[in-house]
Length: 124
Image 1 (cartoon, rainbow, N blue to C red):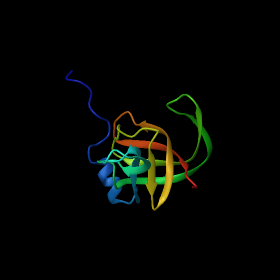
Image 2: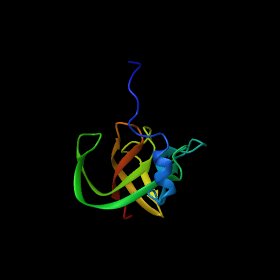
Image 3: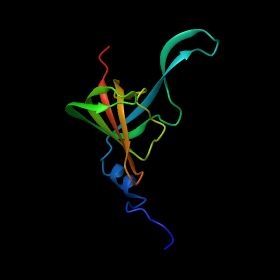
């Protein structure tokens, strides 16, 4: 046997996107503390390669999910992203339609076809 093959057809996510399954686009932001000139200021900057990602966002009832530091974080929304995005981490933010969310958790499916983000809406 030459190895395992994917049970997900390679064109599946593109076909789903064409049918409107991923109706939104979102961008991942990381906190930047040091400016190019060396001065310190905290701001959120778009992460290269994680801009305008096709996605579908939906509301959750308040859920607690483990965060990377072992604490529980309440999630208010989830986002399903087209494709696998292993560079996304809980310390980042996700923005869709000018609505900002903190990323509280990240899951990639076993076939690396999609990524699920657990989110908490940022009010401030």
